[in-house]
Image (cartoon, rainbow, N blue to C red; front, side):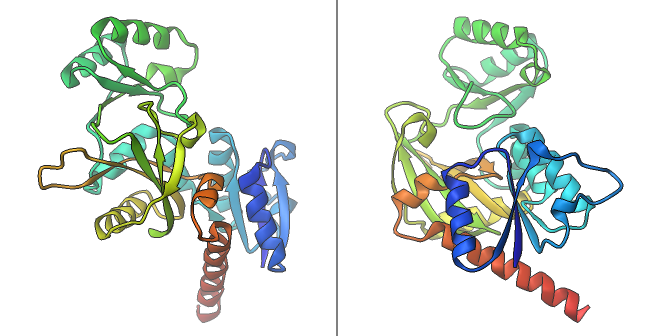
Length: 295
């Protein structure tokens, strides 16, 4: 198959994927989106004759536009624009999970410092405030007091970008000193890992240690439901274990990532992660080809 890989920087994750595709004899078209001009009327030549495109754009804005243009050009892309749009925005992400009945932390969104403070105080201390767009645990804060809340809200209100005027506030989940990242394709887990840290933010990008996580039936079912809630695709689904579930759900889904990194997962597990991703891409292209033939 002929695969386009859209990127703005080639990281270890992209190298793993590119090497796997080439090792299997697939033709790969590397598409540096920084060098392209997209026409709303005509398909860009970089997208012609491709069987599928993989969006690996680092910037959220580029990812959202690239996926939309690819779909307009009639080129299959993973992930879809619908999935990218939902996953790129934490508020939309939370709404999709809540609408689907997937357990997720209680969340409120406000647009002024005053209403944001009301939301914070309704949760009590500690609670968490996050940017609606962002990754790697950046600009997240655990708020332990009203003084801290007022200071953080003042800083955010002063920042220039409109996204900082959207205050995304969540309950603080009492969890073990770890969270869980599951890489899944259309809801089917490839592998999972725990990310452990003494810090309340347990992202691998923040220095958390990683180890393999064996999914139980509840985790598998939750991953499938979460994936379906945002439109499916190649996703990183982040779970937290609830310290005292009181007979209810053992896990809560706090985020789904649509341009998911998997280098840390590859190092933590025995499974060939890029190999499993390419297996899925091959099956997806074969399925779409079969539909065209039968149609």
